[in-house]
Image 1 (cartoon, rainbow, N blue to C red):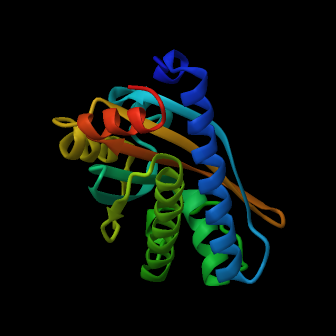
Image 2 (cartoon, rainbow, N blue to C red):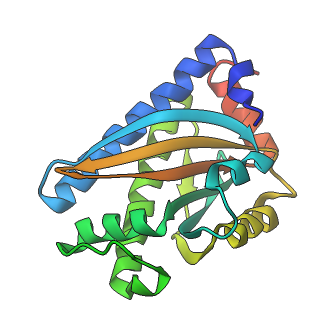
Length: 209
């Protein structure tokens, strides 16, 4: 899969990593405050990929996933999408809802309205944390919408991305984000999907025109 990240300058690569580190740190602090316990977050992988490369990250079109999409307005326009596998979504929701029982065969039907509300809050937290990091490093101020949630197969999620972003976006900024709390660990896919002009504006503000 093509990785545009490899063609960026060292200064821009450092800036992208700093966005990931600051965003994850802010999100971990927010989640720890909500839960009353320590949550650690890391960003082991950052890529700038062509929009078509999202499919490679999500895997089989038949994989059930939960997605939260946020529209962006302001200095940077486009979308943010947070995508989790069903098992990861259930685990994250369990943490926020105080649910201790395990479910090794969790499916789409096991997610309740309370779970979806919890995942919406996680989407809000991650989106706000990463946008705050971008603002602090680039000076770009962006306002997120209320998330809208979707539970479906990965293939359907890709169709949503294609419809919402395909006409105005060429690439996605991908932050692999890992949560850990006590013995629970899970990963989610965080995609920043700026439109073409916003991507250029972001790159210029980070020192690359």
